Image (tube, rainbow over all chains, first blue to last red; front, side):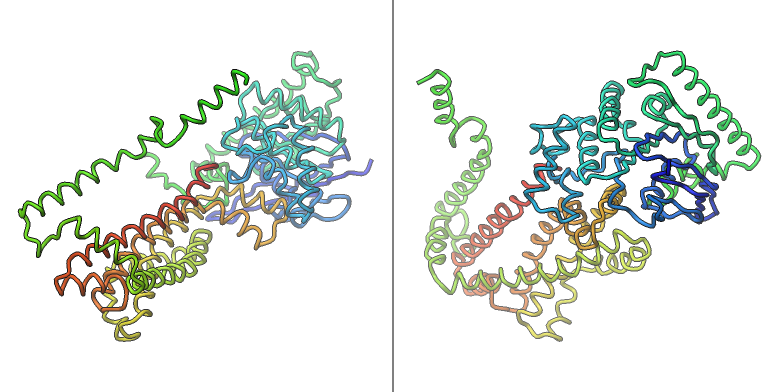
Amino acid sequence: MENHVELQNVSKFYDSGHRLHALHEVSFGVGEGEFVSIVGPSGCGKSTLLKIIAGLDKPSSGEVKFRGGTICGPHSKISLVFQAFGLFPWRTVLENVEYGLEMQRVPKQERRELARDYLGMVGLSGYEHMYPKQLSGGMRQRVGIARALAVEPEVVLMDEAFSAIDEVTADVLRDEVAEIHKHTGKTFVLVTHNLSEAIELADKVVVLSSRPAKVKKIMPISLDRPRDRTHTMFVHIHRDILHLLKEELENTFIRHKLKGIDELQSIHDMESGADRKEPRLKRAEVTT
Amino acid sequence: MSVEKQRALTLSLTDGFFTAHRFQNYLWVFPLLLALAVWEAVTRAGLVPGSRLPTFSSVLIVFLTSIQSESFLLRIGYSFLNLVCGLFLAFSLALPLAFAAGSRDKFDLTLTPIVMLFGALPDLSFLPLLVLWFGAGNAAAVIMASLAGFFPIYFTVRQGTKNIPRELFDVTAIFKSDRISTFTKMVLPAISPHLFSGLRLAYDFAWEIIIAIEIATRVAGIGSFIDGNVASGSLQSGFAAIFAIAIVAIVVDRAFFGSLESWTRKWA
């Protein structure tokens, strides 16, 4: 099967103060209709990788291919679900879902109907005219998902999409995303730090190493759906991935002990978003 | 008629001006009336000489006749026009600069210290120079009003821009928004609560500066009207003009800024 999305030796360096090697020659493919989860130790560059696939960031070397063409910016057939939902608070639920269509200059009547359809799909009919602040976290993410689907993408990227939502709501929402994946046959790529979530949803899990992130292992998940987290195989896979990640964390810890605390500081900066504009706290300020 | 309908009707009848909740919003009327009554009593009793403070009732009569006079209204109109022009100038200069400063650190570091430097100077200290350059006329008044309005708009918009979550910029990028749509459909609404409070402050500052200029340079307007009348002893006209300014300032504040802010309150 030809890959729908393919990463070829994607590397990423940051040059802010000292050079930071975020991704090292990451290569893997995502088949059409496949659900791929990406996991890795915290701060390893998972989100950076997703941003590169989304075209929001450029790789320092290597390429991301979509249907054989190189990605060099956001693509209208690749959509993203954001960690903090990314809704516009001044727009109603319906207007938020319409946003992508509006940017594609879909006529008002048509985009309104499409938006209503997708709101129905995520179970938010009747909430069209509410503002995001009136909704719970889970409902806001439903709006985020509806907005991502409304532009009829071929690939849906999810950046820690369930991590800002309470456990039970997230569980329900995961089931619904699995359902949407099954019905629409779209390609999904999910970045998460939640291993059970990764295994539950994915056809394969890409395990990244600690910084600079390399592909440590690709684990195909062939369990029947809907998946049972207490199934023996599920537990085994979970244990194996956890083991891999713990190994990575230990490696990182030893490396940092050798390299000194400066690197830790910069890792911390990277985790909190390398290109964010807040001035970096000096260590002296932190300790005093 | 069903019970529900009857209940709805009674509710709608009692839900008027004088229901308890609505009534609370007008409590401020009482201290105001009390103050005016004290004013009237003190002046009537002759505790304060009429040449210093006229009675409230005589001021009210002059006010009611003044607002029917075309020249009086025109003077308010002149002042208001200068104010609006100044604010418009301030807005069109401050908005792009503040947006640039809020979104680009280098630009912020280059421009903001200079803006702060000028902001620290009392605006009126420039007045003699402006009069020298532009004459004692509307141009000087407009420029001074824009100067006064610039700083609150600049600093609120700059802060508002800095507060936009990065994620929202990613959202516009993912859905392939062009630069203009990004500005009009994301940045502007995102900074609007900041912008509105900046505009409101600018409006207050500009009124003060406009009146001060009119008094200092005798530019035709309501400020010079107060000055002239008080100097020639017709205090009633002076007070009437102050009432008129107060009413214009409050009505515009409530009607314009009030409606802008009620829009942001819906979602913010």
